[in-house]
Length: 115
Image: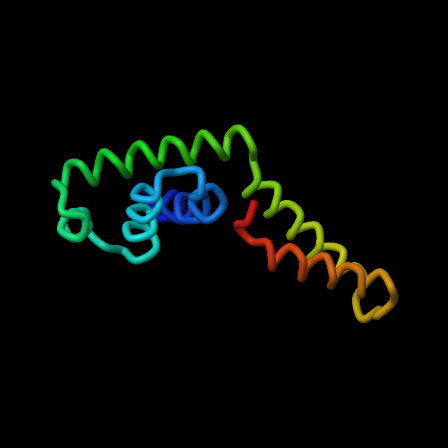
């Protein structure tokens, strides 16, 4: 799996992990966020390496399906990009618009991954 795909899986888990089983969510976090091997995860859960692999693969499919259906991760990225563009265009202006953008940015950062 490409490094960018691994990043997507980690981020998708941040957004949709609560829709997975607790074990799937934990395994995805260990595998993608902590870079723990399948063997080490298997030892931790007291299951076979193949069972961990199967669970992670099912979780990856579900996370991808959730993102394809809901698109929350990509919508969030688009919003953040729009905010950066507006901030750039405002330049040094500290008007009410800048204050409102900062409030929106803070709100989005506080809800990162929460649905």
